[in-house]
Image (tube, rainbow, N blue to C red):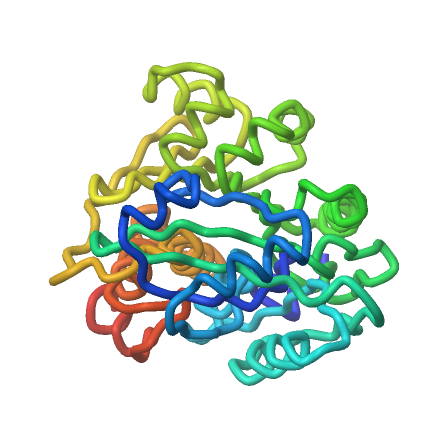
Amino acid sequence: MTDASHDVVAIGNAIVDVLAQAEDTFIADEGMNKGSMQLIFSAEDADALYAKMGPGHEISGGSAANTVAGIAALGGKCGFIGQVADDELGQIFAHDIRAVGIDYTTEARPGDPTTARCMIFVTPDGQRTMNTFLGASQYLPETALDRDLIAGGAILYLEGYLWDPEEPRRAMRTAIEVSRKAGRRVAFTLSDVFCIERHGDDFRKLLSDGLIDILFANENEILALCQTDDLDAAIDRAAKEVPLLVVTRSEKGALAVKDGERVTVAAEPVDKVVDTTGAGDLFAAGFLHGQAQGRSVKDSLRMGAICAAEVISHYGARPEVDLKKLMAEKVG
């Protein structure tokens, strides 16, 4: 196996996030499930909801893209593969991700649909309710894969959100083959309970076939994956299927299981939770960066907790402080 050219190469939705504050009553009146994510299937519905948003912040996002942006901020070398359209939002996304030092070579797709966008409503308690129009991102073809980039990544990171559309699902299966053939590790995040409800059998087969080396989940996701209401039972069951299981538990911290050994860390304290958008994405960034550096599971968990705490202290899913300096002060 040759030396890796990149620490992490991610494949995910290429999305521009639009964040705005909203009251709980607005969330209820619009029939949204607070704190979760729902898909918008038509451009017309997306435009109608966007028109109801208050003043917002626009920033390039997408779960896996946020993660590699965090890793890049920590000093890691990353690549990203994701589909945008040949439009203004697509240009914004490409500029933003390259500007933080991430290798991004996916060619823009001409014509409709437009570049994906996620409208995020942040309630006074900091919870974010996401409404995603996947647009061009759901048309990522196998031909768009940069196989040399994938083979050169020490860790291939895939997001469950992108498993929903058929075309990128085929592309990600091919990417797994390329990565494993190159002797690399494959990490997968379950992303959301709705992804498991739609594709749980697929996810469980990926695990049982030994295709995933690192699995990320939160409490609700691991329960849904293992089809139980018993958290400890779910963790034990999933840990038998994957070499390294990572479960985030919000204010209760996080845990990992490797070779039957469970390791836990407390949540990093924050003065005020402003916006939980990207908390899981940045946790994965800290953890994966630690793993790429050869650090222990304990240190990797702590790094994840530190990154998550930073991102929930402000609006948006990208770090606003010097993460390398912050990590040096807190972990060394």
